[in-house]
Image (cartoon, rainbow, N blue to C red):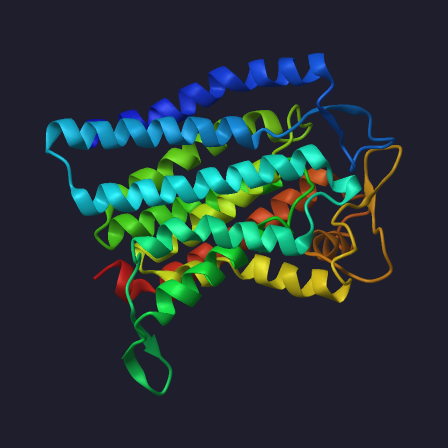
Length: 338
């Protein structure tokens, strides 16, 4: 099983590494390019929608894992059902994201209401298999069986919330991919520690694909993720939390995105996360107020550095996320190390 585990992860990474240069070349040839908004005069030279390749490599890796466990220890119906429900959800989100990419953010993309509706549609595979557990622990009340409230209401809210908010904190080279690597790696550890190694394998397949993507997406980016990546990453985080029954842990490490949502609402969802690029490559505040964690990071770093660059902001947000992961290890140690 260890061999199958490692082979599926390796397959996701190798396939992604193989496909990304070809996707980049094709995007340049047909002009499917986006502006790098945090570069001075942002030339149109960056390949688009790298999420399609990332999700494809992830799915192949997971299918190899399913084939491995099926032909070695025999099919496990419940696990296979949950994995295919997860894959269906992620595929739907990738399609939604890709359509949104094609419409273009400058033209408004899909309307907010339509995106929320489609995100609900993406949660249906998890609803129909009655994913997760209905028993929850509530403050001052104790353990409560909430019955159908969980699949019919909490699962859609979780998928819609994670999918939408993960897309808010974006727009800097390497940011979306790096955050996904940190969060999903940790959730994969949580899944393994709580007795769900199959869910850890699924999580690490997308991590492997994201690592390959990060190589091409880090500063200076050769390819952008697009909504075809941010939607599926948010969906995977929500789905892993639901299937692994560790929602509280997932919400805790998702705090940056909750904070980002409140900051975006402050700007009525109209303010962009980008900064103002200068001729020397440094960045300045785009607004007088703070409307996102990227703005907050730039504001804080300006207190310690005369010039702040795109990489500085990305690494600063990574540091915040890693700190939350370490705090989660302490706060939830009884669950993780029992």
